[in-house]
Length: 182
Ligand SMILES: Cc1cc2nc3c(=O)[nH]c(=O)nc-3n(C[C@H](O)[C@H](O)[C@H](O)COP(=O)(O)O)c2cc1C
Image: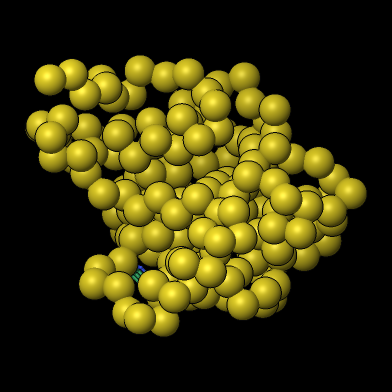
């Protein structure tokens, strides 16, 4: 299985870090935007060099000549986590001006699984409309919202829940959260 993980410039850099740790036995391509590099350093201390160890390939968002920019190159799914509202809105409108948005447009045209993890609050009408349009196109809109009923005790519990939900949509087994039991 080959999964592409796009990391754009929204808060929540710990999400792709934990996701990559839990994508075992999977070929991973990572694309990171300029703002995401800065936010990841600020929020987690992680650098691109450190991230490099957890993926087969890592691309700068300007590397439009990467093979995954072509629909002829197969990958199973694209996860953009966190997904900035800017990147989300570009994808909804068909703008493909960097590698993340180009790979998203490929995933949409090739009818591949696309999971977006937008982190913003509150949500403007324009972003809500773009999320709605993307959902109609088949994208999964998966905001990093805690399941309070599972009684998270730490930020790690909340992140694990979000990463677990992403893995659920990728069809990958995990034990990152314990399902609800009354
Ligand atoms: C510290 C910091 C935190 C940010 N957090 C968010 C966020 O949570 N959600 C969001 O949509 N944009 C956020 N932004 C704004 C985006 O980084 C900005 O719109 C950028 O152009 C997105 O580009 P990219 O999607 O190509 O990374 C943040 C910016 C900074 C500097």
